[in-house]
Image (cartoon, rainbow, N blue to C red; front, top):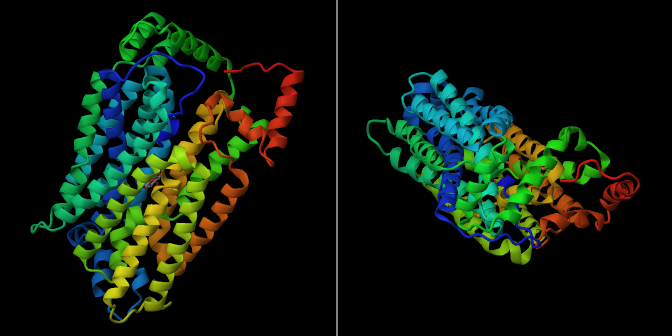
Length: 516
Ligand code: BGC
């Protein structure tokens, strides 16, 4: 996904330039990219908990939900693979699209990819808003997924190329903030539209995804091509003119020279994918796979996608479920701010570990609360007020823990640990692993809940322990380390040094063919 491509600024280079209007427009467009992604993450769960929507498209689920007696097993009332396909299909499509989008981005530039993303997105929103049959919903979600794949591939690269280097780290985090705001807006709209008397509220929830899509199309039309992309496509003169305009100064020679050199050098790296398999890149490859895998195994997307369904399962009414989802969405956005302000002070490792501990405790409390009332037969009897309150409070604290740790850091950390020569390949691995597991969790959640019952939360809690140990033992601190010096961090690491050192020694014997 997105923010991942934006890198931290270097402390060695000091290119002149300021935050110009062009850069500002870029950031706004990038924010719309984040909003689109977040809106889709947040909208489907609320919609699938709306009765008129279920009645129309998933009558079996509707019947099951309503025919279920209080004495029946509540854990399984939403268990339907077609229903979850409605949510998950988007992430599969996004995975496919991001692979193709990387080629379009290289050959035709970032803007075209962004505009195509916006158009696909608009088409998906329209198909969903006017849907009459299930296939229209699923195809619509897939179009949205293709749109997200294009936007998430092009927007962050564009931002990292156009933004003055000093603002890149902050922009990375802002992208995550935009995602959480998108989720929150979706939660609020679901809550409001569910109240519509004619039962068509879900159409507005789904159709309104078209608004950020239009914004991104308009934004991208006004954006200039990035200098890097122009150089890549052989238009060096035009690239320099553009750089002058973007930076708001004529003093761009050094940066321009570096851009040309970087472009030349990246052309030399013929096989970034196979390079990534070399032992000297073992720490990078491990992180590119482990970080997104663990991010999804925190279980956060169970809340993002299915909070309303989850709240309904544990006995909340329709409105109370959507209201509770809105509260957790708000916690997510607010807690992301905490991360933005603390990440460069306390560092990545501390946030990862603190967030992990917080999530772990909350998951155990939630499992115990649900287990004590619903047991294994899913039959809770009358639910007291304290129960609802405990679950909502602990879900909020859990969400906050994720929002200042694995949420933003799951994208920031990979973006700052890959050396340039394998950065794009490693990022693709990172994005793909993230999308695969986002898809998997979205697809199997209702069935996991049906089979694992309250143990589902213990399952995720177990992974939180594993990932915290992983961070503690294997992730070096990257706070304040300039991107060019990142290799030292690995060389000094008690475990990874044997891989990275061997590469340094090798480099002494044979000069590297391509240092970018
Ligand atoms: C994750 C998403 C998640 C979101 C929640 C992102 O960092 O990649 O899967 O839904 O955070 O805020």
